[in-house]
Image (cartoon, rainbow, N blue to C red; front, top):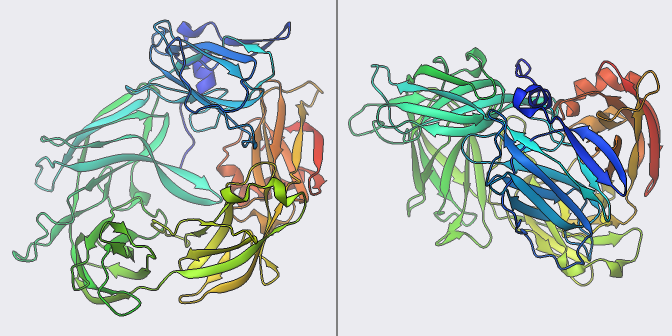
Length: 589
């Protein structure tokens, strides 16, 4: 998919005639520093707090204004949210506050604690969300560092309107179709795999087949239409009519590879789009579901599309009957994963059983499928405190969670078994579905984190634990540490001049550790003073490179890392070590 064609957010905002104010003035302890402006509208005079603050209040203040990018007028009732980037401490709950701008677009946060913050502004009505320091629509913002006693002023934002795609959806006879879900999705790479990510606010056709998808960030989109009541309607076995509609991409194809991209700019409306749904012969999928005791099981059987873009097409389902039988109607041709989880009378069962099977639909009905569910497996183990004092861990807050690792080309639906508490002797038992699962510890207070997860002495922190059906696993160890690594530094240009705005990509020297999702690959963006900082990298041998800009999703692609590793700087990181690096900006990422 081609790159975004719209101007980057920062450039757009600074160049706009109504936004000539152009800079944020940051005042601190008698000194003044200047940074780029990211203009967003602000709200009410007395910003309410989102969370109760049990810790002592801070001494810093942050204030600014929010404007409409198209008119330059102040925005009332825009929502400004600040969140601290650091994990909460035992006596320091995370800062997470929300302010609404007043009639003059002003917002203010008082009694802030020192730290790094993300600042995000939003406004209903088709406006784009914007983060402080954001340059491109899909990039994260940059952190704003605030010190004790500091007053940070004129952190202003201009909120641009998003793009709009509007039109009509018709059937094969040229008649309007009601209740069609219309989505604009963009192609995004993560870890070398591309997927479609919905953008903006999806639309649903009205009684004359009209739709409107709005609040789209500038970029290229694939427009898809899915008849929401496709699982029924004219797909009636009694009258023999199996005509249905496949999820259809503009201008009228079931294949996203053959679809036409639509390029949207800020505030642009692309109208008069006409998309004709693709009529296909649909199929019924039927069978029975039984539990581990060979008894009929209550549950909802979902047909989840498999392939390059899982979950972006048509998701159809059928509820089991009292005898365990099920029928899913209106299934378009394609590859699917049937997934079902047991339900109690009021929702999820206490020990939910799970079953799955792969099917391929080519137009003919599929019958006689038998799904046999299995009970959750149990992973038993213990917590080991590798460094630090165990008594400093709030054991009652710690929970061990196990989540399935989705197979290639597929997704797995929940709900999943809940996290399990840790017993007084530091042992735990957690229920999991069969398959590859990854263990994590929830509720740890900084600086505590997982150092390693081991099964029978082998490190499975990143690879996960392979659990077979009807198998319980023992001998699992989760080692904790309070020795957290930190890497920080500054970047200069080829002429030795300080660079204020840049990205840093940090990744392991061993290419085997690039496979996503990886703890050994990070991106970091400079703060307003031109410094970068990242914490929590596992000890090891690393490479680091500073670039002017990079897509954080592309940066996790092993192919991308392979192209830059020869130009990157090597460094080693020990457990709990703090490293300061001085880097030179690379001109060609």
